Amino acid sequence: THAMSGTIVRVKATLNGVITGRGAVRPMLLGSARWSPTIRVDGASANRAWLRSAIAAIREPEGPDDLVTMALLAPLIGPPTSQQEYERQQRYAREQVQLLAEAGRVFGSAFAQLDAVSRAWLLSVIPPGKLLPPVRSSVHGTDDRLVLLTYLLYHVTGPDDPSLQKGLASSDPHVHRLATRFTAMFKQRSETGEGGGAPAAPGGRMPPE
Image 1: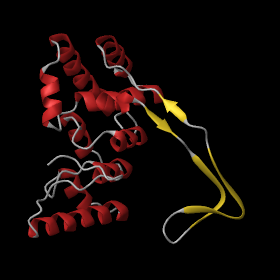
Image 2: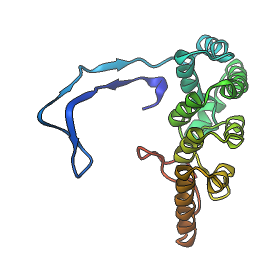
Image 3: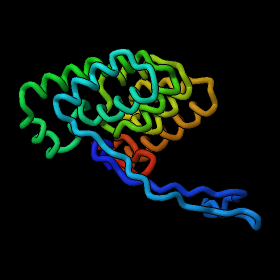
């Protein structure tokens, strides 16, 4: 579901649980499992007033609320990933186009100010194909393992991706192992004629070619 549209969430809590052979979690003899009530998470209307407020908020990101704002902005300011989205953007009013361009510039600067955990979280929620060039460049320039792992899982673009090459050269076993597996996958795709594009993101999302 698009973050701007909001969503409905239910949470299942399991006490004294065990993981089954199929990966499910079920309570043991003295455990229990309960579902929460349905929770409505409101989205946001990306009108000009909201965009101005969002731009002002993320100039100097300070807390979780600003991270949420950045997550909501990301799909709006990233490159179009479908013909339908491209055509919709062509119908934007001039002021809205200017605000989105300003938001993109501020977003890149704000991302660079975040700590590693915050950057990794944002990378995990920004849709594939929606990373701005300054954000991608910032990731390519980092050696933080959490940021690199998250980027590789969600945003690696192909066998020549600089962060993939950095992962292959990494001394961190987890980063190196993940980069090695992606490299093998890209090679297999190339050999079978499937192309060397980005893999399906966790959760089944597939970035555009």
